[in-house]
Image: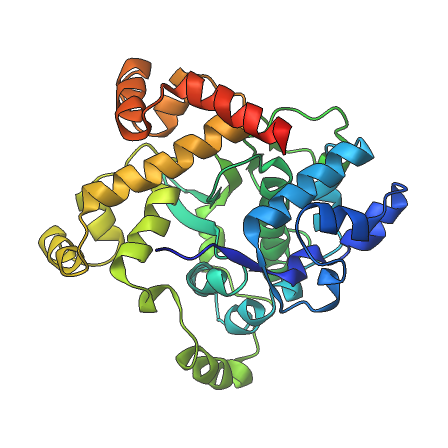
Length: 338
């Protein structure tokens, strides 16, 4: 049985102060989400990611602030990621720093997957949050985190080419314009940051070459992406690949630096197949979209790589015993009764 994804309590940094600024009781909100009232006190404490996502949504609703997550993200920086910061900070260039960051991100948040893609001079850092339920605020936090990391690595004069968010346009744009310099596109197929791929070769302004041997020693003692079972690595890769519309076994094998035959042989040794993993991740993302977004069946079908809404409906019904709309209605009823 797979473990419930967790996140470091550092994700709550600033939550209490921000909640109080809206006249809310942060401890009561934490307890209503099933979290300890003093969770913010120990940044390295592991908390269920779904509970933290629920907390952010509840706080945003009670505060009447659909930019709550973004305001929370403004209260933290690269250092908030704890050990991930130490591992990536002294890499010589942006590409290598991001590679380390992506690989070791589970040390901070096990439910968040980050992918870097490049095409025709454009680089895109996209993020995918695993699990069911509404994750609008958590996605805002994740994208703001990516943007702030890039600005810290490249300098405050650096600007993204575009910020892309799956969420609908908020009522108040002020926090988004302030955080992202106005380059924000809402209602998109993915959440992430687009920038010039040439930036990947630029030097990392935070790097201190003298400290690099020590961070290398630290990495050697910690589990990273490459140390995970192959099935789990592919699950995380697929979450990011779904958004691109290119989710095939050959491409996954290429991203992992191995042949398709080697990948399939190693998966068989772990008792699973690529297509079983693809179905698993599609199911996870589909349920997350149905329970946490207002996207239509056709839009969700496109996100998951199905040729049509009918194909998606047939697949979903066969896997979960309910048509997508019936499942969405049932999930909505379940949330209201909680």
